[in-house]
Length: 165
Image 1: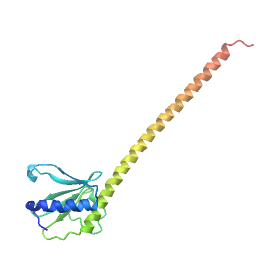
Image 2 (image 1 turned 90 degrees about the vertical axis):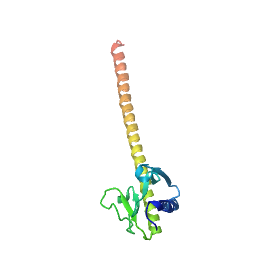
Image 3 (image 1 turned 180 degrees about the vertical axis):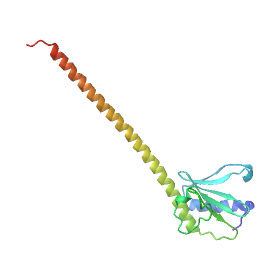
Image 4 (image 1 turned 120 degrees about the horizontal axis):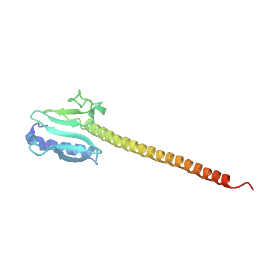
């Protein structure tokens, strides 16, 4: 494996293939274009949110998983950014062997986590909507009770006004 900016195209091609093989629905786009990355941007792989970013440096190629701290890593691929509460990264150095099966499992776990987060957000929104609906229903119930009380009051007033027959 070659490391360095001049070989970043090879790496990105490999990673693109690895990500799409692990999760066919994953998309790749370029973000954060700046002079330090030749204005080509950083490759970002996403599915229901960012899964991973990739960057090439002189001595290392880095894959940073957006929510890596929440992912299981039984193969011990994460070797960088281990102190953070959210992200974890894998630094690949010249000559490193890539455990493709472990990388694929990590990608799938990251996508599953993103899907779970989206599902949880949707559930929270539904719950909020259901709470709003319940409040409205309760409001209608109170309104119906008031309306019923007004009807009873009108009936009582009518009875009072009627002379005893």
